[in-house]
Amino acid sequence: MATAELQKPAPAPRVVAEKKPISGSRIALYVTLSLVSLLMVVPFVWMVLTSLKTPVEIASQDAGLLPEHWKFGNYADALKAAPFATYARNSLLIATSHTVLNVLIASMAGYALARIRFRGSEMIFYLFIAALMIPTYTKVLPEFLIVRFMPLAGGNDILGQGGSGWLDSWWALIIPGAVTPFAVFLFRQFYLDLPVELEEAARLDGLGEFRIYTRIMSPQVKPAFITVALLTFESSWNNFLWPLLVTHTDSMRVIQVGLSVFKTENGTQWHFLMAGTTLATLPMVVLFLIGQRYFVQGFATAGLK
Image 1 (cartoon, rainbow, N blue to C red):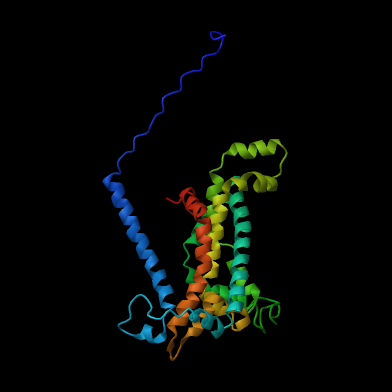
Image 2 (image 1 turned 30 degrees about the vertical axis):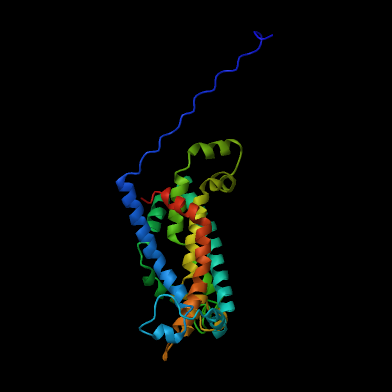
């Protein structure tokens, strides 16, 4: 019986990988990145600590970095100074609308420019590239005139005269920022890198173009969707100039415009302003921490090098 038993093979020797010492260049890189990270964090730390100080302590020349008296009540008082619940609701609705519209429309446009060959596709793509070169503030006046003289809106006639158009309305706050050229460019780069065998196999299975876009290609570019969503939400949430120009009532104001109530002719209420700014910054910090892996991957794989 002993000779009939199968002999178990001897276990393979375990290979222990030798730990290579960290090179001096890598140490220098880590030190540099740590210093840069510290410089980036310092303004946020100063903002939070300032929001917890008293006005007398902020105005004092001998004030240190840490508050002598921690005034957590500054946050509650800042929220009572203006209807920040309304401002935050408006900002959330506008940022969410911009994010959804930009992701949907820009992804479809990017897919069409990358995977569908039609006459003029290259010229359209070049126009999107040209749109990226236009400074943002040069577009403010034309967009304002379009919103102001929108026909058959806000009491305007067919020629756009006689009323206020889309001013002080959701249309003015949402439509102009619905799609960005950068989002179309980013989606095109992602869809362009996908293998052609995917769509060829889908067409052999009888799928139409829209189903190929939604079920086959789009799930492969999740980092692009996360990147565009984060960038769009951040840009819309922090937008100040455009909401300031097209709104004039508290019911339509956004949170960034609402922070201006703490800056008056008599001076600036720095403790309230820093408290409100901290609350306005918190949602973006949380979103970035949640989607940072896809955010970094999106830029690393989109040809933006």
